[in-house]
Length: 131
Image (cartoon, rainbow, N blue to C red; front, side, top):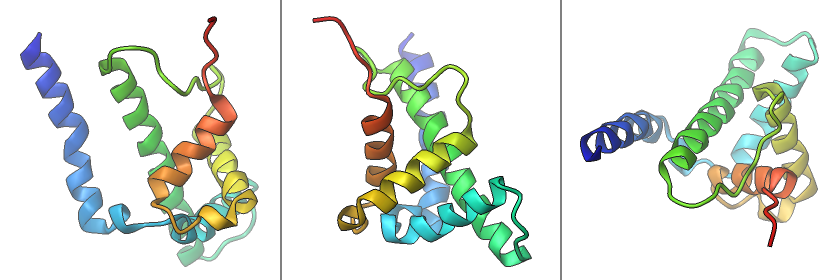
């Protein structure tokens, strides 16, 4: 069992090395908001230039990776997850949630992008457990 857990952990962390090379670990909410706003435009079928579409996809990939990583880490972690996503939700909807939160909290955009995205999801989809 320990070997399986270690293998899953390594599999989850290996994309982080690639992300760090890209500079995602240095991204803030200020960096993500323009990309994710373009992603919302992309999802709304707005005409975007090739460069804008590429930037929109950066956000979609970031949010998708965040969701996958959170799901995998929640499955491995002991205890209960903090965020309970709606069963029928999708990446596009989660991008909209992140953009809305970032626009509503400009004072927090200097924080790391992962903190902004996590807080957006926590504020919107915090798990509710009976006491």
